[in-house]
Every structure is written in structure tokens, then in C-alpha cells.
Image (tube, rainbow, N blue to C red; front, side, top):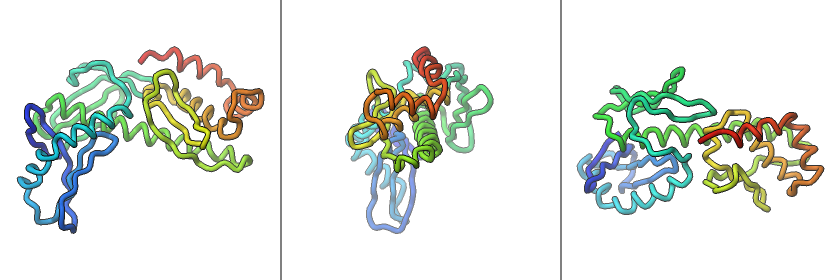
Length: 233
């Protein structure tokens, strides 16, 4: 990961060189910034382009932040706790040969190859959080969708989006929207929400048939619903 000063801010970005004539800058939903550069492009030229696109980059970052789990105000230093899959993990910031995040036992390690500034640690955690949320949601849906084959239901489109009062929803067109805060809840609670929304692909309303199917596919679902509601984020 490279970095460049932009006013009082430091922009951290990944650099990838490919066979192309022009430089492309991408901002991804996990808040990672990528510079896709020609093989012969100098690092200084890439950094100059990043700075020139600074306003646009920040606009994209602000947009994508709405899809990440909310975290109370943090300083992103060793000793803080961060919630993941129903457990609180102690944050450990360390120097490393490369920028990375590792979950080990009851601790969440963030390794920085440069001085661990707050913004760098935040970005690395944001990437890790988003990627794990997406993988977890996709995994549960791919496993559960097999149980809906008798209804001729295929894997739906999934969108991760913050919602004020809902964990998930299913649109009339069959798209499932999931609240990113779910990644902080226990795995069984995540499973409950996804099964609930998949049931809406069969029965759009909360009628007797809907609850009968939910009870068949997840006996004891009320327990996990209550646990989810009691989880403190």
C-alpha cells in the first residue's frame, strides 16, 4: 500500500500495474483505493494523479461508508474492542512487513508496514470488515438457497445498505437488502435474518404460510430473533 499527502489528510492506496495506456483510479465499497497504472508509469506521477482526484476520492469514500457497519467513536489504537460475529475482540496494532488484518484468538491484529496512523488503521479495518461481511452473507445465502429449490427460487441479488430500523428487507422484485450491522451479531442471528428474507421470496407477507415456512426451515427462530434484538452494538 502506498500513501500520499492530500492537504492535512493522508490518502492510502493500492497500486497495480498492467498493460494499459492510461491511469485509472478506483474506490471500492470496502473503502480501498486502487490506482491501475501503465507498466512504465512512475510512482510520483501516480501520486500526483491521486492528489488531483482527491475531492472525487473523498466523495466516493463518504458514499461507500454508509454501507459499512457503524463503529462507535474509536481512536484505532491497541486496547480498544471491536465487535464481530457476536464477540468483542481486543484491537492490537503492530508493525509488520505488510499492511494486513488478522483475527487470532480473542484479539484483532492490525499490522502496518509504516507508522500506524489512525487513518491507516481505520482503512485497514474497514476493508477487513466489509470483505468479511460480504463473504459471510454470500456464504449463508448460497447454503440456504438450496432449501428453496422446491419453490423454484434462485439466489437473489443482495445489497448491503444501512437501514434505520431493519436488519433486512426483500423488495417486490426479489432483491434482498441487508443491514451491515448484522456482521456484528452472532452467526445464528445472521442466519435467522437471511432465512427470514429468503422466505419472503416465497411468501411476500407475514401470513400463516410465511411463519410456517420459517418455522420449518429454522425451528426455534424466535430465540435468535430475541437474541438479535438484545445484542448491544
